[in-house]
Image (tube, rainbow, N blue to C red; front, side, top):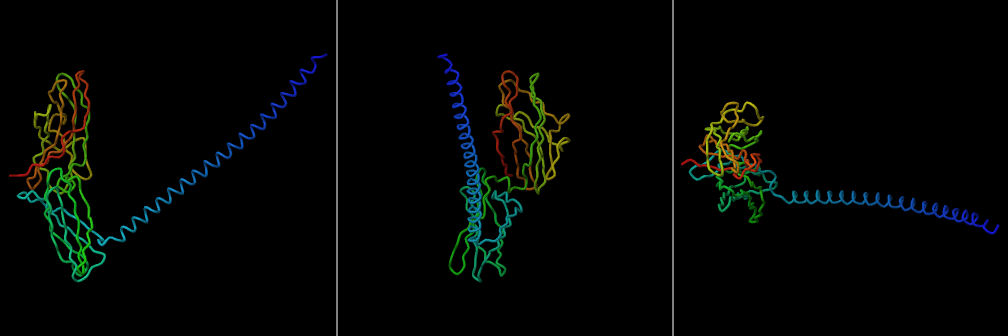
Length: 297
């Protein structure tokens, strides 16, 4: 009889625990709801900050454009001066505002070479130049204008080109490589390259380099397996237009495409490069040769 109170107490304790669990669950649910609301408010705040940053960037861009004196500028390559190793161009500039005494000095900087030419602005606010830009391999070309009106001069940047190939008559527009595999002492694969531009592609050949030494030249022909909407694609003039390059494990192999344009300027474009591993597997690598120009004598 004395121990009948134990079940009663146990039952009471269980009831208390149940009430506490229910209260705790309610608190957890409230905390979860608050956390979700905070997360939602944080997401809204981030979105607001992002929109504000975009608006500020757009406003700054509009302010910069509003300060510019040049409304439009274009540069069109027209040919090459092989004697001075320069690119011949026609440049045109349109001002937003001008006066009867306005002049513009166009400055072209290519590496250590600087070329300047000053012309008067016509009655429409336009001016034009025939400009020869020195082509130095590996040098960035940048253009700027000094605009003078009423004795006041302002300078504006017009653009820059880190890759001279973008200005040349011929440009590499794409490359396709399949394979290669190594067996029986030779590397076998296929390389196609596409060339675009305004000039003719003359004397096309593929040059093969094994461990840094030129090993072979293979004439190029129109590719049968690759085409381009903006240029002409070439492949080695071999059986099935495939390459078979004798080499040994440990060798590096590079393929380039050489041609000349109608001005006599030679171009050697990088096409593909591999390393033959000691276990006869082939690893494709980045070509270590950039565009190389060969000027006629």
